[in-house]
Length: 624
Ligand code: PEP
Ligand code: MN
Picture (cartoon, rainbow, N blue to C red):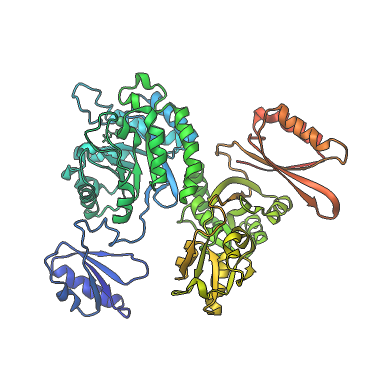
């Protein structure tokens, strides 16, 4: 049961009520429900709600209708995020967990781990204790396997996860790994569930071979009831009558779970399908359906794998899948969490602790699209620094008030944001990464507003442009450009005029308790903004496959063509070319180019030399 306290109830009252509940035999929990003064009471479902309501200081009693309590969304309305080492599962970053079914040797594990990490995995998984259907199959290297996992973490920096099959392994698990998996066969091994609950390590709880969603959530409840709320659910297919795949992947479980529980959900298409070719299509579908991550079996030599070879992807196939996921994620409002992101956040957090600077500076306020991009890239737990202008972001990073800045460079409907191109030239900062964010615009107004009453629409100029077709349907509307979408939202609240509306994100509407009068009003749903991350130096550890450069050419016939020839000769794909006037030199231009290569790599030395020689001026804005 959830007890909502009266607004005026202070700490003393709370303490007294907690003591009273405890006396009645309840398990009492602090609830961190958005801004509300609430207490959770478990274990005495027989108590009459009126008895509880009669307690001094209690305003309302909300019974939790489901059998599961602690895992229910009613109990904890916000999405939970579970941390395994530096990696966060849940939230806006999509996590790839990869590795072989079983750890076979240090060489095998390290080979696969390095490859998986290179392609985008952030968590390494491998079995040391294998629950095999046949007692004659390979049972795992046991403690030796755990030692190898610890070595993988040591050498790659990736946190490691492995399956625990018995409470007797708890001490070993605590010693060697970052997260424990409870396998499908053990989903209802209640002693094991209680054990991992007490261990306190994050738990990856797989769905049982033939379990209902409710049974699965009750198993998670066992772990939370022991005080461990770091639980991630893993859908891995259920047994049906269909023999063409090993199991039947229940993708509909994802939206069902998202509604019932706050726990993150990952999908394991490897054990679900059991067939290599079926893994990538189901993985892509899982992301589209809202999964928080994927668990994929990867092996460099699957033909000789000691278990689950036929369903293991070759590392390059895993890389190809990661590329697909990178493209799909922004459609559903997420970004793929690459290893270097966690590393760069960690690094920035360290600087932040030591040097009192924030991790990232962005334009606008919470709910602005720059803020959404910032959360998608860095996660939501970091310290951010809102800025009133793009130049202020460059200043904040240059002056070490923030480790990174995030700036929009171009939009698929409205083109380049020229001011930022010019600032990139002016400041001595490096582009260290990029991300594409889907921009969904909404018409937002005060609660109860009707579209026919709207007279004025406020927003940032690009947002107005991106919604032009929708706005043109209402010829009597006046559009007013302000400097960003969150400012528009604040202005309509300040003005308090019933005819005012703003174009902004759903997040901005939620933050300011406004209503969405019309959603998805951008002219074309393929409305993406490309943001780049700027920092004081480039990211050494990142996998780099792109470079941004800016150059000017001699003022003579064929000068730009010369540069294009060099790019073509080296077979480099140029993905963008943009010209900007040079300030103070009328009719002369700077060219900004994005190239699909790491121009600072040793192999690109000649290429870079030739480009330098053919240009008057050349600046590398970043490789990422
Ligand atoms: C595994 O993850 O290696 C495994 C055995 O999976 P499941 O428990 O889902 O069968
Ligand atoms: Mn397996």
